[in-house]
Length: 576
Ligand SMILES: [Zn+2]
Figure 1 (cartoon, rainbow, N blue to C red):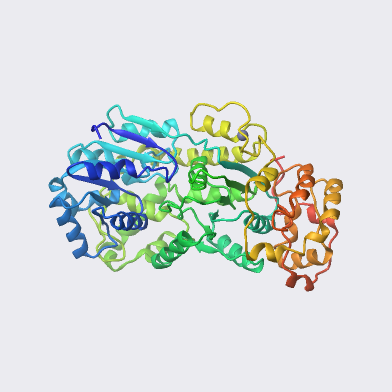
Figure 2 (figure 1 turned 180 degrees about the vertical axis):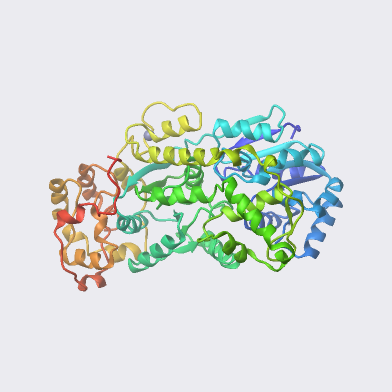
């Protein structure tokens, strides 16, 4: 309020946005909010308008008339908040009016995007310091959920913050149980997740980086009698909106989502966040699990990690880091089109540079870079793209040339994996070390390295009411005593009824789950038996039983020991 620059780090939903909404209401003038995603912006604006706050968005999803209206209202001083993307500063139209805006504060959401060392670097974000000067250096409120010291320094420097007040809310929130669970095959994931969903009632989010996997998981969950919503970037925005609304309204909705889901989600009672795939960085993970338990009640945060998923994340990272040669290739393709460029669309460009998968973001990033470097203007696809000036390789940012960013991102991924694999040190201590925070002392009582995770879950979490447990019920239960015994003998394995197991194999969803998806000692499973009844008669953490209807479709049975052995495609077990 006093006009000092503020850098605020705090988990999602802890009232971060209030820090700029309040000044917006209290101060004369406009708070200009820079936000990375148009979809997110719309949700925020809708929510504010519902509260009677004069907020508008200005972005390319609006008609020209709507954009003009928003600008007019802002200039006339009718708005408290105006949301824009950083790219907006580059448009001639905005530059023409920016000096007329009565800007009192510049608020920057997801400020870690500024830092090339952050996990979600956006070229245009790195220009915000420059843009800030252009609009008369208003005080800045920069917000991010998590950031390392390096990122904070970068943000401070890049935005020219003047001795910013740095506020850090702890990431230790004790109501979040943190666990990392190794799975040995892809097939273990579905039953493990299904069983968690049955054991933990209330709303929950399952994250995966791969859309295909989400869809497969949804189908498998349906077979297990667990309905879920699926949310990812490929859905139409209307679909995404209705998914989000359905999730917000449901008392115990489960959403399977890519990390696109959640930024705008303000739901306090999320009881679990499960990662079906290792995130790219610990920042990502911390930010995403931070969406759970905002009502301060207990919540379960679990990462299922599979060695081979590392390769998927590596590809993502490579796709997020175009090198100089790639940038030049894109540039040359556009240049080669000459006047024909305005008849081309994104698919043409994709074909021209030989991009195989849509998940590959290099092209999009290169287009942003070319725009930022002043080589191109306009947009591909709406006939407005044109080459403005030749690209001078000397102008290119150093890190684009050096390839250092790629190296850093890969390192961050390895640190994420190290965190996942770590079995000895409290997870809160590991996080504190990563984020340069003060290390907590003693047993945190809420992580899998401090206490028995399964016991905690069964003690602290209420099982889900409804379809899930009903389906699992009766199939697994009679086997329980046998399973407990054999689990002691076989070390890591518990067994099911033979019939069920065969069915599971056929479906490739169920039976595999009994191998140690929890990374827990067998003795924990023994204790668990006592709790079985309370947990809605569900079988147990990794013993989700396949649906009864599948048990008839028997396939030749393999012996139990073979089932536990890794498949040839599994990577060597360096994790052990
Ligand atoms: Zn701990």
